[in-house]
Length: 475
Image (cartoon, rainbow, N blue to C red):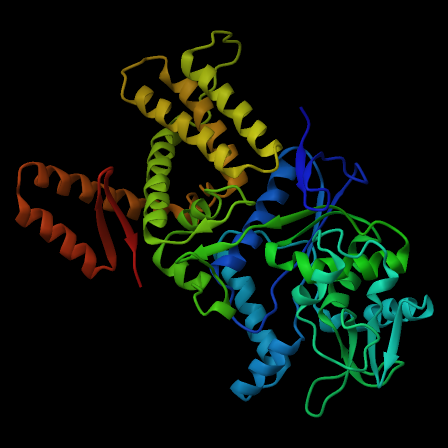
């Protein structure tokens, strides 16, 4: 069975066949850098990271382009509030985005284009649409004629009468049609602007992504990734202007990541209910955050709450302890042994199940399930005294670390070299938890409380759960 992707455009699973077998092209809508990214933003960035990792794991060469929107209304307004320039604000928050992404273990894209560095490409694209009579100029601003694109609404599956309400377009009596959206905004006093054939101004949000995607990936790209909230109007408008300009399909597969919820509502800055990624990473290890964000399929909403994070924390501890115990067997393969033990069979089943899950629209929840099923079997095997253990345990270690690396839930590199101190710390804390558990079983509450309190002084918080004690570093 080949790889399948749920295409938001067709609203069904489709066989994934890249346009160019030599290289898969992916464009991901990056952040508008007017603030730090929150956990909802992080989910989209992380899913993109895992899609790329898995495609490479399956033998594809991938070119990923992820933009930074560094000029728009939100940036201008926030900069004015802070009394700094829009350029300075965008630069600061752009650097913070890369810092936070690195902490989450997200690999950099091959290209991170900035909107302000692609003004000529945007002007050229707009000019093409004007020449085709798909766009028109009014007082230095340029608008796209929505009614010229017969397929407008095909991505969002909206009826023409529903489009205006969802677009949140600015009311402008000068426009030919209220649905028409701006591609170039005439300059306003005090705002950043660039020279154009229509006078000084700045680009609209939608034209930015079309120009940057086609600049770095060509007129047709394989996969376009973004949050569910971008499906309309942003992605709908990208399709309209790009396909009218080139006559080609803009993106062959559209991947939309569902919302991260908190208290039953979508997490977002507009809702004032967001958790910054950097704050979450101050309280939980990277692998715990990654595990939580991929614990549900990317098309399913995910609830951010303490209970879910504690479950991910416990899961990571089980995984980490298992792999730490297996590490000493690494490399102890035996060539020529054709005997298939039950654990070897379990290893093969895990890899098959992992691939089947990820091949079916990147189902990380099922992929994690396959990994943890093997972890349980390995733990039972470790407790048995088997003189033939090293070879099969080496195979289990290799299979687990390989698949975990695709998901980024166990970083073998961080646990080698520079990660030795972290590993040593983790072992010491886990040892203290074992001693504390022994004390609790003897009803030695003084010792139990002393260990808990002294660890708390070191910013290590213990949580007692039905599955046992877990710990985390708190700020």
